[in-house]
Length: 274
Length: 274
Image (cartoon, rainbow over all chains, first blue to last red; front, side):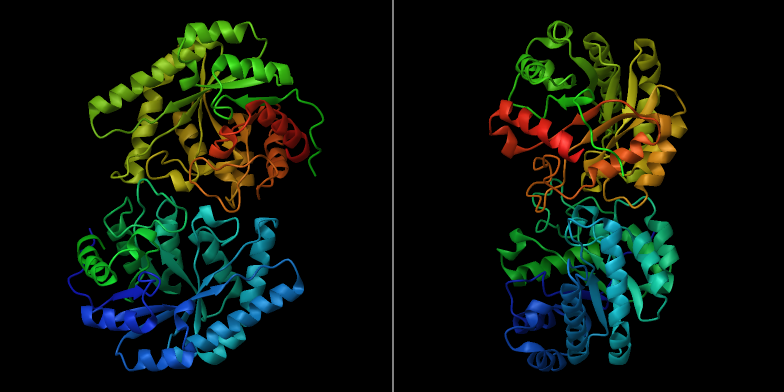
């Protein structure tokens, strides 16, 4: 059995978890609560933009773990695909500006395409931005998404597929993100985590509620659902991963409540259930 | 490319697709529309019970394709598991009474269990009812459910798992159901359909809507979504499957409309998109 966590040194919270907060409010809230890490969502770079965000973050002492999210490579036209590539380059630039060493990729999918076609365009898109990422010193993580998002969010739906794609791209700048919400059901998860090995660039946690009332915004706090989070953390750490444990919860319910209280609940759930 | 269907000889509709209709209304509606097959959901055996249902069905000329659904084997106590086994035996008896040669299994899952424990109890549960099924001349189909149902509906979420379970049980009375809604996203689907081969006991169709507004009751009519239904049908038929093509749509939207019109729309979508 994997031992419980005993301190907050690896805790990181996604700004989308406290979506109603501005970046400054998140930074203040996390630092006051003793949360040492933050993953910044691109919409939280607004309204000040990445330069202003960089100032807020650099003064805070927080570790910037990653920028979410790049990706969404597939498009119906060559122009669309080029626009997506350029947007990913901007995301890489923004990550570099705010001191994030990683951009997480939600890879995209077009419902009318075959999944194979979407995956082909994803692989080509990542390949196209890879030199830019390397030049910026920013790594890219392919995040497989739950199969319920295979229509229009990601045609990469298992860790096996993400590992295959990373193997095809064969660059030290491309790895994978393991998010328990997307992957917990997969009978091959342990095997694929082992296979990913040093290619695990980040690790996301939350929980799967029963019932789940919304496909997007009803994720649970760790312990509220059925995911064996600690077991999966054990598999991830068996690869040598010692990095941040990132709390990424999309929840209309939590967003409508007090965010300071939410951060406190996250801290409790983190030690008890992660 | 798989050729389009040109007639309705293989069309079957699930009574849950026209949920507001009683069994008698469904039977009347399908026969008037020239739909030759029906799969009966257990709640539509009420209020008359299986004997009355048998009379309605036998007089109709409809082919009774299967009874939905058995399964839900896992339980927290031995008493609970035994009750589930007995309920499955009743389902088998009901199937025999109404002339259904097949019971489809939605296998069940308990959120607090590990998926492995749920699967173990499922395998044991099916093994326990198998002699009863054989004696009744009723086959059992393991239906893998979409991973978004892995918490409390089924711990069998890929066709690979269903095939593995059928191989473990190793009985001519146990096979699998291929439902495009649950399986379309799976990168190994073609391989596992080939592997299932003659073990494919039934084939269900509908579509995946973008956006999907509800986890349970927002399935689409064929052609309304992103599933490449005809391609999957081609894979299924390459195994030699020539059986019914069953339309199983759970949709609050369709259930609130006119059911006769829905059956007509199904017929159109069947020829155009299946």
